[in-house]
Length: 463
Image 1 (tube, helix red, strand yellow):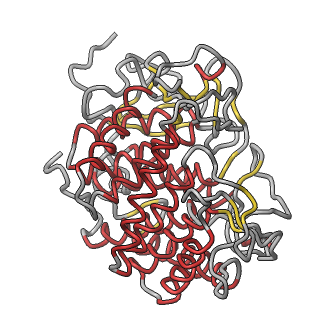
Image 2 (tube, helix red, strand yellow; image 1 turned 30 degrees about the vertical axis):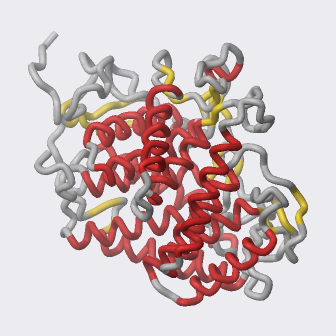
């Protein structure tokens, strides 16, 4: 058997259950110490064919991605954002009279109900103020201003906690969620709104809302059953809460100088990487006991792949903000690991959840596919690694084939479906957060890449 002295930064062709594809042997320690990528079916000691680096955008030069030039890809994203998403929401779902966002709609924009979930008030507020801050259009700022007025007037109970649901006129229809998620989403929206207006009150309320959410979350007697996990316990810890904490505080600490906020951000990063990380499976658990100990029941091998993948790109953003290359590399490694485990070798796309020793959750949700596109875009922008391009291309083409509703005569994209993403002629909800977030983050990244003529950034210096 031939011996390879040093195969770092070497490109191989792998043929396995997922088909033939290219991958790079890692350029830093820790990746694939025990073999090739998941689904490849071969180890690094055999079955690999070294191939020449190509000039098609798969390594180093990002001049062409997903079969398009960067300008073509930018135009594609612009159309999806402005001509599709923004146009739909200007016509449907934004209450410019009372204020707020109504997401319970069918494909044609018909309102199924006029209820206003506080999750989607906070999320919609972030989306439309981020749109205004980065792409302009006073309409978004006005929609955001009216939403803030609605939220401040009706959105809190007698204890000052954000309720979970309101009707169109602001009457409470469901109390606070009991876990703190609502406060996190509202805080993110208020923070972005404060950026847009320069007002101090929304930023102060964002900080206050965050700490109140943490107070609720840290209550070990808290009862907050979660339907997507096998078992719920009093005061249980959720990767999802830490995930939203990371994405919120990574932005908030840039606006507010507060050592306590920075400390809580560092704590969230630590528990995601050390406590929720299960070394036996090399995957992140979703649920831990209040003490951050690992359960000894069905939650022990339960992996919510969607949240894990989403969390890892948020850690990439935090690593960039903090200029922490070690965190960046570790988050990239773990993003790749979860993606490879989540990929459906039969029908394509990413599974949402799994039991390591049991079954997969076979449905396909749009938001998870879009988290992959954000994460791989970050890596394409800031590294010369080939594997993010390969995965972005595969995911982009899959998403474009399966989710847009244009071929059925409707705007926007289907939010999910069965394993094959079969068309659903009717729906009861349209998202105002994950989908536009993907489009906005990636469009901004493509703009920066065009400014560099397709070259990766020099974030960490010469790689």
